[in-house]
Image (cartoon, rainbow, N blue to C red; front, side, top):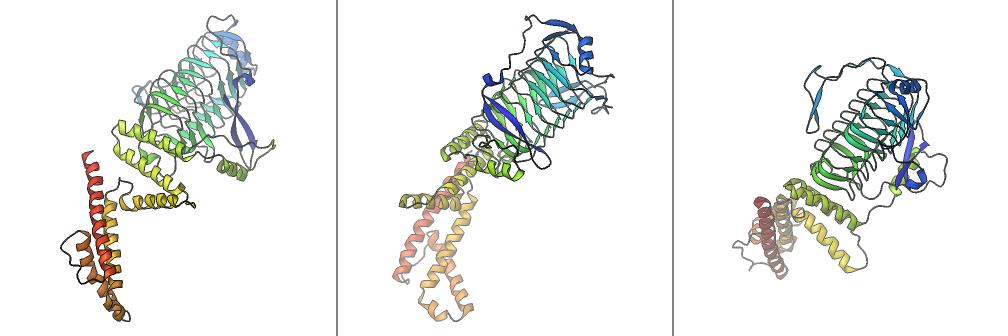
Length: 475
């Protein structure tokens, strides 16, 4: 299935929604193989056609097509764990004077034998390649794409270099086979679509900026597959980052990445470098990012888009539980118990909030248990909360002892004396709670019952604190 993108006008911008369309309906062939027989043209002839605004259809391009009108002296860069290291030339990105390329680029069913150079240019119109093979890759570093970029069902052997590129409109790289993908420090003002693409070797999206705001999808990476390490270090994602069904066979590095909303439902990770603090606070999204039908509306307003997003079918509680458990298991396997505890705590909060109280008395007991577990020990991951819980119980029982004291009625008219009576019971309540030598012989029968209950709660609270704290210390 292919998530077909449809654009609808809103106030000031276009909104893109996604619906599922089968590949067969698109009638797009596979990219040509090197052994296929195609009409041959030289790189110079292909460049002339592109400059004249003519499409390239079913051609084998020999040589090195170059859309630039000037040479760009790019410093030699090396990659180290997803970061760029300039080892020669200038200490940073060169100050590029971008000449304008004013014609739309339309390439269909072609095979490029040489290195395709698109770097250092300002492309005024759309750039599209469909069912095309690039045997030696593409170099589009430092370029600006004013209109949409679309590479659909293409094959990019060797290296696809889009580092420091700026995409002012939708950048669509769907169903593409990448050998090495370099989108380091790229700027995506609208959608960045890499759905159902294959990355054979290292892919680098570090320091990328995906600026399409929530509730829109700023990065569509669903059902993509990365056979080697994928780097998203220090990237910024302002909208929904959709990684549903993505498969990261090796390392997926998201350290330093800022998320607004992210969906990793059914995603698989060989290794996930991520801290839970990057996802906490409700930034984890569940369910499919597929909106209801628009009933053939010719246009949709911004408030309708937001309403439809909120009305999409939310995942069931067991599905959310499964997703939290998958992330927690990943954190535990990597020894990151702090992230594991944070993930577990947020899941229990979600479960507590979504547990409904019905007519069945069991539902009341379940809800009460969740609340008590939250207050008393933070679901077993916050032992300091047990100390606060114990102090609260001591204070509550001290007030109860004071209310049941016969002297309380006589002292009710004197506020100062009432407070003194309550404070005098704190020492007795603390002794009873900690099972010290507290004498209950002078208490009324109701207060004696409270005394026994407080002693029992004291033992249970002490046991709860010891087990919770010991668990954390042993880790």
